[in-house]
Length: 547
Ligand code: ADP
Ligand code: MG
Figure: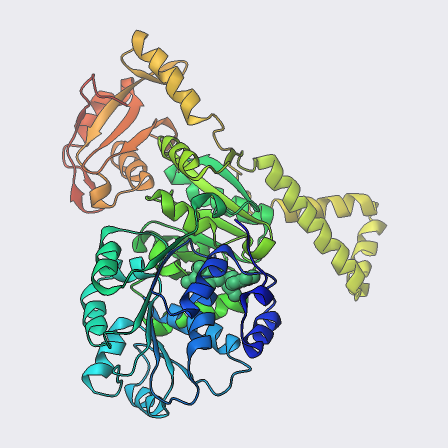
């Protein structure tokens, strides 16, 4: 669709000047469509994805319509979280920079109530807040809505998801009948439509269609990984691309905490963001991320929604998003405002089919990419090390060491020998083996295994060992991971980890392939088997189990 220049929107000169100063060149589609309509005083139901400039879409006309002479509260903006309230209020402050007769005040939980009461006494015309805290002030009569001209629900779907529906309705009911009601949302679930029906008057529907939403400047790729080597794969990609700022999405709070712990353990500057954190902790994390003392933000969808940080280089879907729309929300965090960004998605096994659904739905082109190999990593290490050596030479102060080298050369070693030995010692200090990832696409594997099923009832780990499946009465619901199972089996039965074949963990149980010749001994030794304190029964799997 055609977008307009801000100059074409008939804005107040003070607002236009602020917009120009903020570096906005032209209005985004949602802004182009919404600003004029809201200014006219009409109710609006606006839908567009994260990152499309909704804040200014309602913020500009809101500020334009405020009467600076009137010291009553004229506009109330409800946001789902404290971060968003702060973000919206910062954006409004910027927009109203040259209209200093308008007072904008954010009100949110976690801030001392006394201070808020004081600030409210200074009669702000625009208040931005979370529904809970707004209700709180209404009950204390420190916030009066009777002169309100306009109410805006930002990220309305999110507020409903967070259980604010009742609060929102109470707030709406306490506002004057003739108010203007603006509702912005990224999605339009039933609850939103009900709100619209009950509280808006002939709303103008503004929807920015999906096609315009996919951000073209994002380089999207996926990597096939195993659950147990996701972390290794992630670290390798981080090392290869060395992003300055990245956001990693996990599907649950627990996954966020675990990943943060692992990443920190490996020396990355990573911290988590999810709903269980106290507001103040979240603020600290976001601040660090904004000023780049924190490089990696690990987050859940809800915690990261709407959060706006510029210059994110890579967004990782460490877990494939459960919802197709989340994919768009997540990758929308990178590649803002014409910059290019990367979005990398991990898929485990069958998830590839779900990703293909996402691709169909979003019309996104997500290319399969191979994980960095051991050779890539080795080359990278060499490159980094050589760089370090060069820097050290450039820095100088080497006399002491030159003397050592010279003393060795007296013993007939050449400088080349000595340098090479030092290289070797430094590059392979840890004696660790870089694992080589399995590179075969899952679909390929599945085709092969289907073929194999016709002629074999047991599975092969390698060409000369017959494998059989065993059944373990423990699964995801007990929080076991592959490494717990391998560890416990190896401990209890003496079967080396390298001999254990594929492991499929389901919610309630797990299948493990082991060499057939170990079966009897394994069954015997696991009569009183425990994994992480849970009693586990082990038996041979029924033959016709689907893989
Ligand atoms: P949404 O609420 O739709 O998720 P935001 O209002 O948070 O989006 O805007 C996302 C980012 O884009 C912000 O950094 C904002 O300052 C910027 N932005 C908004 N409008 C424009 C515009 N017209 N041109 C360039 N950048 C813009
Ligand atoms: Mg927003």
